[in-house]
Image (cartoon, rainbow, N blue to C red; front, side, top):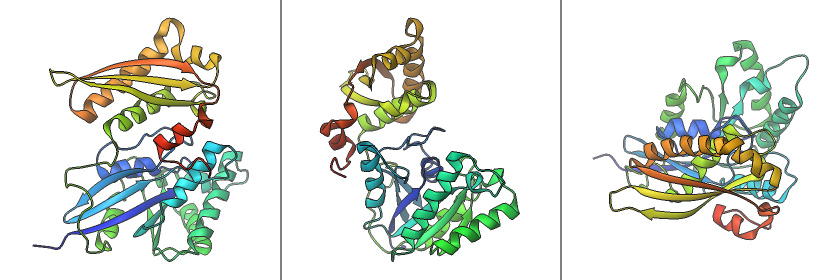
Length: 310
């Protein structure tokens, strides 16, 4: 019987590069929240992917950027901390944001700067790093070669992969390479486990994702979700009470919506995904409260596994 092998893989990149989508695709199940908004991932999440006798423990990290607020500093510090003890590093880059053109948007310019900073830091480390250009279906081949050359010059990579995490194109080639290089080691998790997080944490992530997708531009970054109660029912279902915490009264009104329609839509979308994730009936009850300084509360950082002093 083949020896078990296991690799811890840190998935790193600038905000909105597609790290969470890649982790979900590799695992084959939803383990991380995914939206088009930056800073969706706030803490380290571990997805577990099996490839034969090889277990890949994929650490999905918050985006690396120039932080200003306490929560942002803690998120970036958490991302870099994932590299400690990792067997391999996957640097995910948003290819369309890096595509050569006459005029860059502010967001794309920041993405290029963030990616260059990550590449320069990886060059100083001994851990093998793999460059993954994501969303390549939206970029021409000559542009991809230019992006690759620019980043390879700055970073030290063992391989370059061009993929679409959303469609899965090229992802198995990446998985095969990571699996082939995994060291001999007992698996860290049971074979049928897909993520390393309590169910109530996943439930909060699901609702936060649905809130991000539904709410206006200014609300998501000042919003968090807490699973307050988790009650097992005799019929096998579960009753979940969650609170959406926002920073201002105006945000609370937006989150609730006219006649409660917005919070109802968020709850309905979250409930359906929870039922699929937990394979059971879910009774979900959402509430919204205002806490102006929720992002400064030490308890939040403890729940997310973030360093309050970062």
